[in-house]
Length: 475
Image 1 (cartoon, one colour):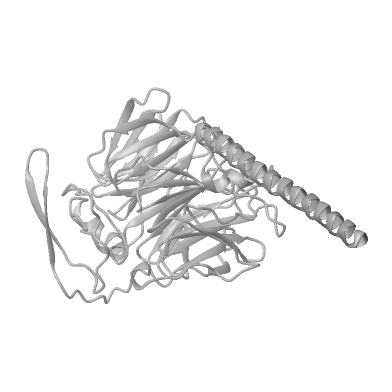
Image 2: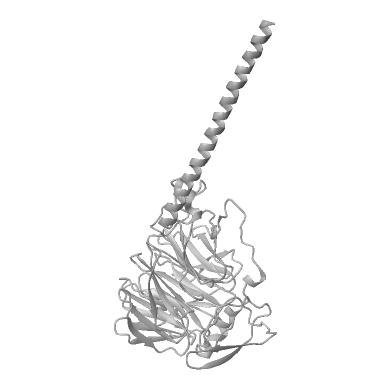
């Protein structure tokens, strides 16, 4: 009996010890949870104060580059064009709010708003010394601005309809502009004097680019062709035919040997400049290819499209490297930073986004993070998806309205009338939209602003330039 009592006492002691041990474990777990909550709150406060976006917190904690894009949302309507200054410190954007905006790349802060155009700004370009900015507008003019002060230096008038594109020559002495009047004009960048008018296209000219040596100028047109011109004489050197619809963008490779073109047939094409032969076709977009840009090393081509995405392509193989998603509407412009580590895009969704394309952070311009697949793979983020096509199926699911129609046989089915009140007058315009109506833009737009999206791209490329930049393509 004594033995049984001793065993009972021993069992009770062991049970008490287990209870105390388990209690301590529960206490420790609670303390750890509370400590994690406090630490998380402190990190949240610090990261919010430092401006780090939520999608980048884990990246920062793990010591890797942030996967968050930097979004610059200053434009009140569509953003049409972006350009980095050659020194990489400033980003310029032009939009349908009739303004040019300058951004500090390091902080993402808007530095200055340049006002002076009376309609949409379709194109912006920096001079090689980063001191001057050129802007092209639907008001038929090109304006030159002093970057440091924001002062308008000069207005170049001569085109008879909207000016869609502007580019500086590599030496900064000449400026080229492309217009809906089917011409390209060359200007003396210092005096503003018109040097030459280049004619030859039979449709609106919507993009121009100088070769790296400054001797050749490329132009893209609604007549489905790309033309190469001798800058010194204005003589047409060659016509490149291959696109089946309007051509909307041209870009030279850094070595000047290759030209890229993008068009309404949803493709980007590479051409050998010396021979004029088509080298390669990039297919993958489900909307018109509106803008193209080569990386500084010439190995990657970026394309912006009406399907709301930017795609990166390997130039040597023609392989699609990845798709960058995040914009919620047509992406009108794309460009690389001078160091090739950041990509900027402008969209109808009113935003400019900065994307990282290398394994390093650059100030507050948040690049994409590194994955095990590639040092330049952009990770999924809260504001946008970046999918490496080598590892996964594309995430883009196009909708009927995301694919613009370009065929010249489009048959209008309805007529839409829009009235807008201007500061000094009231005007009414009539426009015939495509059979599938686009989503209406909530922000009221001035009558004399030309907007384009979806099926209205055909109007811009083939019809709109005839109306002197004063007919509103209603959205």
